[in-house]
Image (cartoon, rainbow, N blue to C red; front, top):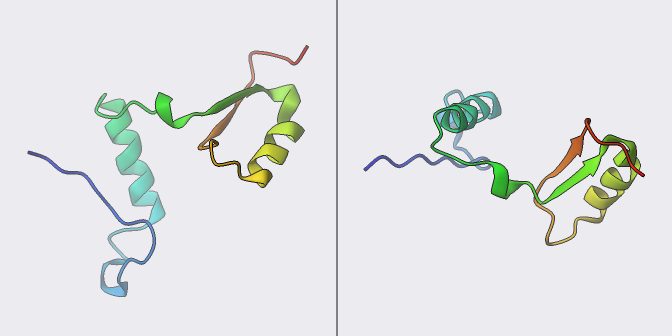
Length: 78
């Protein structure tokens, strides 16, 4: 069994040099590249880039069903 876990906040000072955001980001991206994590379920909103103001307003509202908003640069708003 291989368990991958980390604590993003509240890391003890003695471990802060080993666990920082850059390392967590690299580890997460590596797991995606290896096919061990599917990030698709983490995206709850996809909006055309033309709706960037609406996307930021939505994020600022912090609705309980919003996990991650993504701007789609290949689609424009109607």
